[in-house]
Length: 456
Length: 137
Image (cartoon, rainbow over all chains, first blue to last red):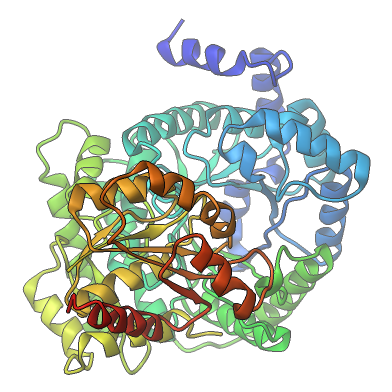
């Protein structure tokens, strides 16, 4: 038996899991409907239809089922399964208790679907009934058991990664462990990819959604993509969120797509399918629900301008709590409508900005590759530890927090203090040149506060 | 002037914490930022370790209320903390409350400066005033 299989048996031998039947799961995936695989939809995207995916997860089976019915009525392309916070922290005991309370009292005691507690036999009934691709949304550093359960349920898109699910969400979960746990996930996804259509992995580009410069976003997208492809994953989505400037989003999309292809080919994985995902605004939302809808609509336009393969939606209720299924379905219908009328968009290219951003990303990537460690994940680990990669507003203790960013007059995010990140001098001078830096530090801090809340 | 700061309890809201750090540095303080999810013991240990003159605790999700009650008991276990200026700010209750009730309550817990939903610069100005008052600046 391989080491991986030994580890799988240990992971799946858990008091919260009914007997996990490896052979049956393998047979299920081999014969599963092609419609369940988002990679299949990406592949046949001949009609140039951007896939629309909302967010959403409820504790009970019945409520999740009802949510899916609403989504299907709203002409959804990809269904979400958002996981509750206890499961994300591997606390299946609490999730079980809260699930039971939710079932008995008809109030939601969890902020998502506790997939491990429901188990794959139950969940699979729902997934195969709707026969649409489902995307697993969580935020789990150790997602081994969760991902095994998801794949066995018929969920063939897995979001996350060791960096993007750790640096924005955790203060002190050990980053080196996260890399190893995600390596397991990549391998299991890669192994199942040979049976039918490929399992799609997706990185979480929004990170902290707070003034993250595009160079940092792209570097992290590329590194998670490489870590996944080198384990054998054949379909991968890079992603980013609306940043506040349409031009900067278009430039980011173009550079991200170009460099994803470039680096995939560098490691001889050019045959893998790379998709682009765009998140509607992920920062603080306006309380005014009509304004929230305008913001969402603007994001849909930009998604088309960057030629995204999939858009992930927000709702008009974003500022006031967990959105209802009605609000969620409304966004899906509205987004589909906007996509339908967005015809004949111009092709915008900003060569100067693209060049600057490309140089920045390639300089950081080179610094990561030049780390003396023996494997890519260790190089990336060291690069985060020594500040070559620095994510603004990450709560994690390993993150340096020495990079400072601000918006210029056109609302582009600019780096005004690079910390230990190897931004080339020419690019650094360009970035700072776009901003008014004659102000004192207190005024700059006030500007940053303003820039964070820019869409409110 | 040394300041220890951080967000108390199981509170992951980091944005204001980073801005407090930047603002304090801009005002010339030496900052020891413990970040989010910090327990009271860690704050007091850090003050002893660094010899800080100021301890600035913040809270966004409001759980400071629960932690505040523990301050007098815990502080008594540490020697040499009596001269430290204790400041707390952010959203200091879960849900809503008004400052007239909240400020005296937190002063009772041993805080010298209490800022409930006060603008960052206003809060830091009141710290400066207290430092001048106590002839520390």
